[in-house]
Length: 130
Image (cartoon, rainbow, N blue to C red; front, side, top):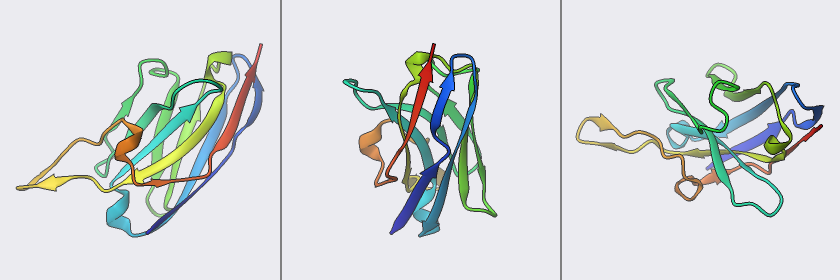
């Protein structure tokens, strides 16, 4: 079992920055893939950024160059630094975790699709105004 608790959301003006945190606990092997997802009002959930057990990162095109995902293993925390925010970034942001698939000596890349993640936090709201 894995527990995820997000924090750091809030309201900011366009062009501003916010930093989200996801405190994790529970089975370490179930957290090989860590991701941030978001869902805006009336929109489908979308992947924002993924970090794998080796520190590799992947970003959605919409946030590439503006957002940075990182993790502090000692603190069991995953971060999402969001810069140059626009109103289009307004959404509920969720932290998610899943084991990283391993087979025949290979770790498979983490998925950017929400349905592939087993554990979810409660979400934190980010609102960007003009």
